[in-house]
Image (cartoon, rainbow, N blue to C red):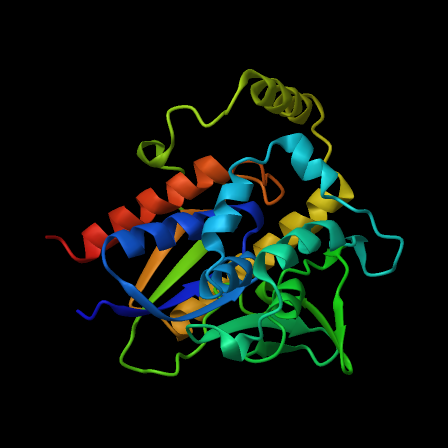
Length: 283
């Protein structure tokens, strides 16, 4: 098979870190990413890769602990979202700079959803940062992006796998699905993903709270509903437009908000890609 590929990166909150591991394994095995598209976290990781800033981003997220993540949350007093998102996007904008999509080294598409027209919107030109910001605007959680007469939210609402027809039909197509049905493969996990005792204590505290308090808050209900909807849509997309290879990441690998788990999730993505490629192309 050709080593030239089109890569589709799906939505899934913090599970999107798995995209980094997948890309690292593809690079290690000599694959050439000639086209990349994505929804939500897929758009973010794809944009960072296409702009040559993925190394910088990976270094940053690998050093985030739960308190760092909390410091990046800026609650919104506007209608349309609980979180403004400016703090985290200021960091990302500083990393990326101000490139336009048409200036990137490889063709790139970020997918958002216009909730006024109920149609997908494909960013193929213009500000990369604006495209990513629109694509990750999870409904009710992050404030939407207003563009012309559109109200743009998370691309995962309409296209959770980030599948877009590449400009070169000869490319081998690989999708990364972050809502897989399979259970977590313990062989793909790090022996101990906790970085230090302080992080372990925080994690144990929240896990205990989770067990004691069986009530689900409204934000959790909304997010679970969105992820259920996205899972159903993703399955329909795969039936209609099946990529040559789908690398599946289990939907229960981590919660969508657990952005302090970069090391574990990146590792899982790398191991999943290694397994899927070996299974499809045994040496």
